[in-house]
Every structure is written in structure tokens, then in C-alpha cells.
Length: 168
Image (cartoon, rainbow, N blue to C red):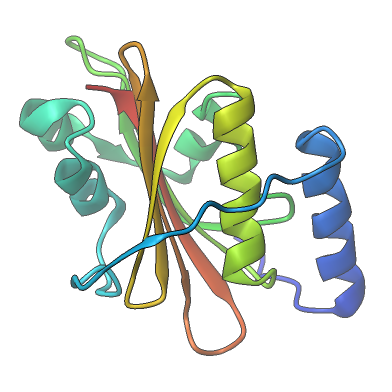
């Protein structure tokens, strides 16, 4: 996996691509409900999927690790432009349709969260937005489709994103 490009040109290009994918404008994040949790703890993507309840416990147990799951994300929830995928897992068998991806980007967390909030709302998803220890948390759904996104600053100028999609 190539390293994340931190150059100002790469950040500007990622922002421009994200803006284009969002239809030209990003929605403002709603006022967040602040909650105190261990959301800043490092988790595997399978743990994030299990904790979000996406696919249920049986699906989390069937998930297989591979970065190729990033290419199988739903169109409304792509990896942020120019994001460097670090971990992926998923399952498509036995009634499970779960994808979980961890990736890095040098774009600040609030901008990345606004991108996913915009994509979710424009796709008709209900969105619950919270802040937990400076981690942007979004969950939501539309029909049987569900998502969970954790966006955090790693402390080194890089934003880490855990993105899970599937069914509840």
C-alpha cells in the first residue's frame, strides 16, 4: 500500500475530488452531541463493525481480511479521495453483506466528516452525528442499509477513518 501523500498539492487535490464527489458543496456538520467514550481507542475494522452492530455478530465472525474490500464499498461511501487504505475486511456469504475499511488521509478530520455527512444525507440516509473525545462518529441507515464512520486525528497530522457499511 503506498504511503499517504502529505504534500499541500495532494491535500488540495483530495479536497477538490471530494468536493466534486459531493456535488460541488459540502453540507455543514450539524451540532454534535458530545459523548465520552473510548472511541479514540485503536480498533480493528472487524471490532468497529461488530460494535456498530452492522451485519450482526455472526457476520463479524465471518469477515475476511483484505484491502480489496475497499473497492467493494457502496458508491455513496467511497474511500475519501486519495486515501491510503491500511486495513479492510468484509463478508458476502450466508446473508452477510459487510464491508469495513480503515484508511488514512492528510485532510483534517472535520472536512472528512463533512464529506461523509454530505454523501450520506444526499443518498437519503438518516445520520446520527456525535463527537467523542474529538473523534467524529456518524451512524445511520436507510431501509436495511447501515453505516458507521469514525474519523479521528492520529496526532501526527494524519486523519484515520474507520468506515463500515452493510445491513442491520
